[in-house]
Image 1 (cartoon, one colour):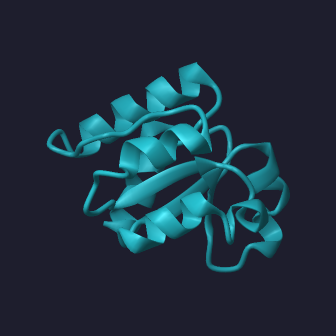
Image 2 (cartoon, one colour):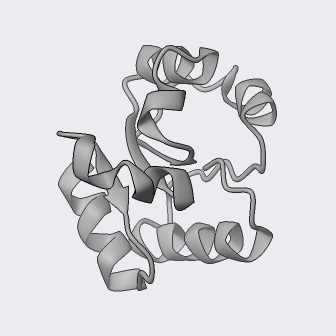
Amino acid sequence: MVVHDGVVLSDLAQTIAEFDPAAPVIAVTSPSEALRKIDSAARLAVAFIEMSPSRFAGSALAAAIAARRGRVIYLGDAAEDEADTVGAHLVLQRPFTPDIVFRYLALLT
């Protein structure tokens, strides 16, 4: 997860732990930090990214997640601003609840 707001980051990490207690969670606040943390991961199931799909596309982080077969769920203002134009991308709209996050995770895992 790359989420700038520490409270949202913590809430999502807790929700993922409830969904799958065995899942390792990498929770960071910047793309550069995420790149360092996922470097040793062979596979990623789902990445929550606080960024617009257009900004994420073509980034080093996008390449690293794709190389590990990860799927992306976008969130935040920029992602919500593009929600109507992102096609097949999943955007987690606010406000969201654990049940909504569970449904998104179930779609991708």
